[in-house]
Image (tube, rainbow, N blue to C red; front, side):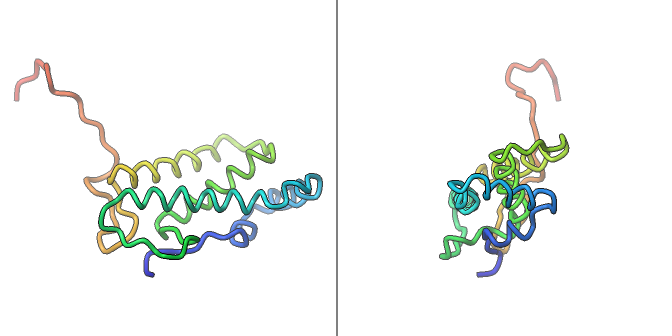
Length: 142
């Protein structure tokens, strides 16, 4: 189905930054009980992104439970890597936290209907997040 892509453990492993990939292998070797943890993190991330899309009316969900909206792939990937790193005890540079925030903003925009992640109208609805002052009780005149 157009507009959907698969997030898999293999894609996350292949996309890990070089230093984090080596840390991950050492972490799994030192913690054999964590061997399936990346699989669990990727599955949780896929469910999180699919559930955000389900909140919108009129979106044709891909029947494959491993598929996520292509527009959110980068955010889902970053979220999976971030969660893995946090679990491994990786000390991220402050800039990396912005990737976590951006993923959550994307999810919130989808959940609130401000962003349509798949379909022919894939775009922001009503522009980027905006804030409007409460005019009730305001002294302002137009």
